[in-house]
Every structure is written in structure tokens, then in C-alpha cells.
Length: 283
Image (cartoon, rainbow, N blue to C red; front, side):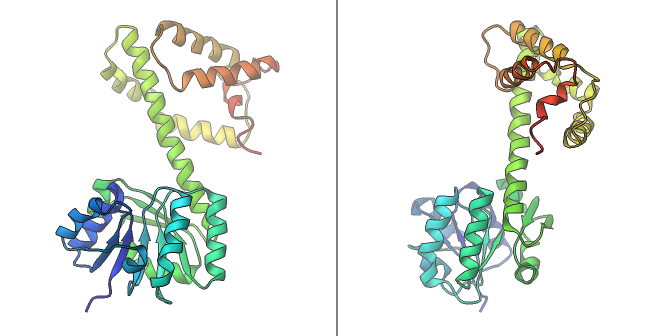
């Protein structure tokens, strides 16, 4: 008989992982705070359980796909009565780095195997086993489950023993994703409100090669290289023109940049490169 695995949390991402595991022929036990959201997976072959402890009983791996630190702590406390001594908790939840480190220390001291494994995977990727999974925790524990994790993602990146490292990378990655999305919205707004179809952003992406710009700007910022190639004062002027040109249309990223630039201009930094907005990003 196949040793079961457990998934606690069957939202969009968790459900995708469960569907993939069932497709591979694995025995899957599941729990979700709202049972009705788990029931469709039961129709596909998963065993729907009433409590976290019931779901993890007999499972070799326990995957958490939850909302936040509070829910992770609460669910781990609830599952402990059913957790086997050799089971490994694989936590895919996006969490705060310092709280993740504290959680890992508590669980290790209690003799519980815990790996923090956040992902850059959406529901479609989860169903196909595609995307990137980060992993932190004791090397031996990771090595033991690595073959199984490799079925969930195209790429597994082990980042070392410290669990907060994966948590930090996940938050930073989401910051980049969310920030870029907000900036794309502002860019389309500037085009649209000035008589250019928003779809023309494709031409800007071709002209500017954003991946090259991001890499070059990140290197200068982390090296604290603010020798001017585009002066802060001129960049602030351009932001003013952007804001004026769109009237009362909502902007998300541009106003925050403008406020930061105003503070630095007040310090007399107008002749430095506009990258000085990241002066305090690296301590």
C-alpha cells in the first residue's frame, strides 16, 4: 500500500498540487478550513479529512499551503497529535522571514522535521509540475524529500539551512512581481491618457529591454553607485510631466517615487543619479 501524503490548505495553489499528486497515482489526504472547498478534490480521489490531525495521520510528508504565519502556526498545532515521528512538514506558505526562523527553531527543538519551501508557481504550473521551488532547512531532511519535491516543480533551489532565507527570497520575488505589475499599469495609463493605445507598451518593452535595465540598475544600487547618468532632478521633472499628462487617472507607483525623490531633493541630491532613490535599500 502506498504511504499517503497530506496537503493542508486546498485553495487555488494547494488544489493544483493535489490534482498533480493524484495524477501521479499518489495517495493523498487533505484538509481545508472550509471543507466544501476540498470536496471536489475528494471526487478526484483524495481523502477529505475533518481535522488537520486526521489528515496527517500515517503521512510521510505534510504539505502546508496556507495564508500566513498565524494560520501556519495554528494548523501545525492542530496537526501535531496525528503527526508521525518520521514525517516531514514541507511548508509552501509565503511567510515573514523572522517568524519563519522562530517557527523552525521551535519545531526542531520539539523533534519535528520542518522545511520551508515557498514557490514561484501558479495553479496551472502546480497541476503540471512546473515552476520554481525554494527550499531551506537541514540538508539531510531536504535530501530525503528532494526526489518527491522534484515532481512538483521544474527547478528546486536549496538555499541552505536558514529557513528565513527562502522566506526572504519569496517576499522579494513577490515585491518584484507586484511592483512590475503596478508599474505596467502606470505605463499603460500614461500611454492611454495621451492618445496611444495601451497595447503599444509592447513597443516600449522592445525599445528598453527591461530585463537588462533591471539587472544593471540592481547592480548599481547594491554597489551604491550613484554617479549621474540620469540626474535625480531631471527624473523628478519627468514624473511631474507624467502625473500632469494623465489628469485624475489613478497611478500606483509613480506617486510613491515622486514623494521619495522630493525628500532626496530636499537633501540637495538633485545632481546625483536618480538611482539614489535606493540609497537606503542596502545597509
